[in-house]
Image (tube, rainbow, N blue to C red):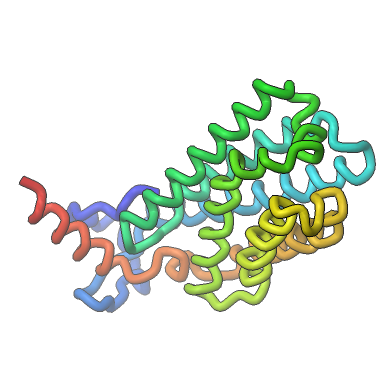
Length: 224
């Protein structure tokens, strides 16, 4: 995500009905804002479809060669975290850092086990969950943001199930190979959440743009 620009909005970007009253003044939803929201929603939808595809392949053909699905998931979540609108810059940066650490863990797993054996190695050596865990922590953060902002029940499922299942697997309480049904549930909830995003007005995903502008003004005033 790029923080909404503080430059004056050109009249070409404005049309009747796009002006909104925010906490710190009026703001305008521009064509660029709408493109960012569309990019975010498509990224989340791609993530959901890729995760469901990965699980379907895992269930029908085994855990070998799930690597390509994991690459799509990683790219899609990274793009979603790029376009997501979060008021607090440190929180946004923390989610992106978690994503980067998780991707790094995935690369290490691929290097150690080979792309075709990533799934098998994860099943045999659950400690690898700690390496890729930050990726799923970032996914959990995305789900929490969607619940906090929109009170979507399916987002609660994503936010709760992802860390719970990984923790149970890491502690050896419920191994990954016995969690299939719950992971399918989480993937379906994520897909429902992603599809539902397209029914919302783009302004809902943007939030109060005047808050972004005010926080950016304050940040710039504190920069030497």
